[in-house]
Amino acid sequence: MATSDADLRSLRIDRSSTPGGFPKKFRALRKIVVWLMVIAIIGAGLLLLKDYLNPGVEVQLATVSLTSPAQANAVLTASGYVVARRKAAVASKGTGTLVYLGVEEGDRVKKGQVIARLEDADVSASLQRAKENLRVAEADLKDAKQSLERSRILLKEGIIAQAEFDSAEARYQRVVASIDAAKFAVREAEVAVENTRIVAPFDGTVLKKNADVGEIVAPLAGAASSRAAVVTIADMNSLEVEADVSEANITRVTSDQSCEIRLDAYPEQSYRGTVSKIVPTADRAKATVLVKIRFENYDQRVLPEMGAKITFLAKRLGDDAATAKLLLTVPAAAVAERNGRQVVYQLKGDQAVEVPVTVGQRIGALIEIKNGVKEGDKVVGKVDEKLHAGAKVAVKNP
Image (cartoon, rainbow, N blue to C red; front, side, top):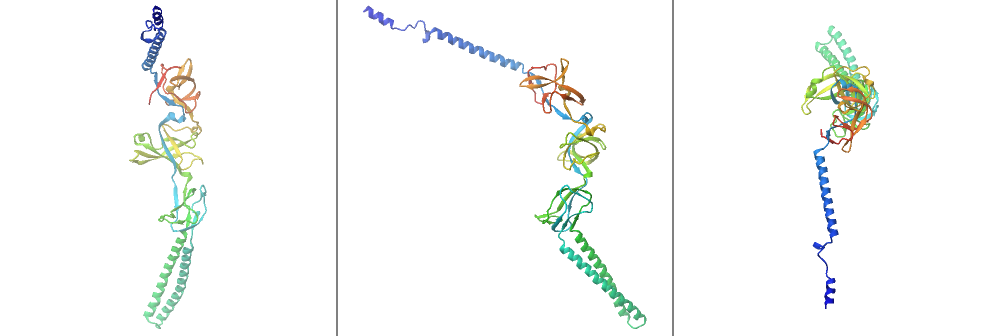
């Protein structure tokens, strides 16, 4: 019996060394994991606190851009378009079918040159009839004049009565009047024929062809299928730039003020200009005043409706302004001296990267960059002593 009790006790589980039902080694492992988690949380909190307490140097970014040397004398810039002072949509005075069109876009025309012609069979027939009526009236005039002379002689001899002479004289006066009317009818028919000829009003260049052969042309284009203007021409020697200047800045613009003009199509080429007119009224909707700038010199690349940038200058441009090239520039405050060399700072992530550069001339608040960066790059716009290579930075909204 004692042996049986001993056997049963040997099968009993010893729980005295495992409170909670786990061995001691598992309890120790659990404590290690808990402490590691606590340490990780504390570390993350310290990093967040560090980032909160030190967000980095606040900076604003500037773009490396191309600038004209004339900006050093600039008092105002504006945008505008090239226009022609002399421009006309050439139309017909008469209505008819277009049977001839002798020009295309880009063709040069001379004043009085026939550009197009309308069908003229009806008006030509009217002209011929008017001429024949004039011929008949001239024949009647000869007969009436002879009759009047005979009547005058017979009246002196007492062969005819005064009433018969008066009748001959009245007939002569009627025929003279009919000749005058016939002459005016001929001139009227000639004008109608001339109205079928569309001619250039001045020397110029064809900008646009508005109608084609076979279309109906009418002075006012009343019908949906009819055309008014046949071609649009412009005098290419009368080009100028029209720019809208804000009312707040119009006091900076004066008559005969020197300007620099750069076309959007050819930004590397500048043209000298002069303010020719400040239109004496404002646009209420846009709060702007129209300013016209006359080219002092331009070439055949300048075309109507091209976009342009106008720089109004404090003093007149030099003779070499037209050949001056655009310069790569950044704000002067973006360049700093570090260890005896000129540098700018760019961003890589949230850190500042030092970029050595070679600087050139000052252009107002800008400075030329000869090498080190390229157009479109972003750099820190204003560098102070806090900023250095590797420094943490935060971009500030402008």
